[in-house]
Image 1 (cartoon, helix red, strand yellow):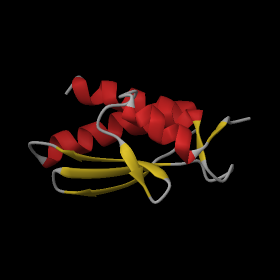
Image 2: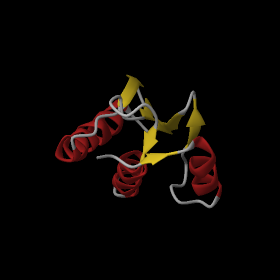
Image 3: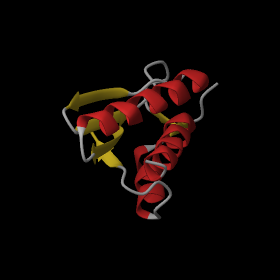
Image 4: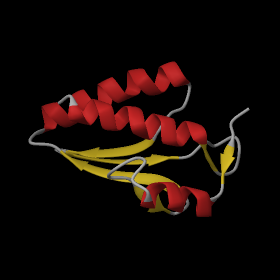
Amino acid sequence: MKKLISLTEAESRLKNGEIKGWGLKEGKLYRECTFPNFSLAFGFMASAAITAEAMNHHPEWFNVYNKVNISLTPHDVGGLSELDFELAGKMNKLLTNL
């Protein structure tokens, strides 16, 4: 079972810099990414999709040209979970490898 995280705990973990670049928006972990071009944005999304699929934890995201907006929240537990923070950390590693 996915361990739920309260919004207060999530805010504290974000403030402590656990996953740099992420914030909270509408009760979800949220990050906006801008890339030099569409190919790099799409490449990031492809790599992140493989990671998310392996975790069976899928993002809500939106892409226009060189921008990717990502929201993370599980749809089956009614709040943030440890998996959201884990996937955000893995996405951050993918971003540093571009």
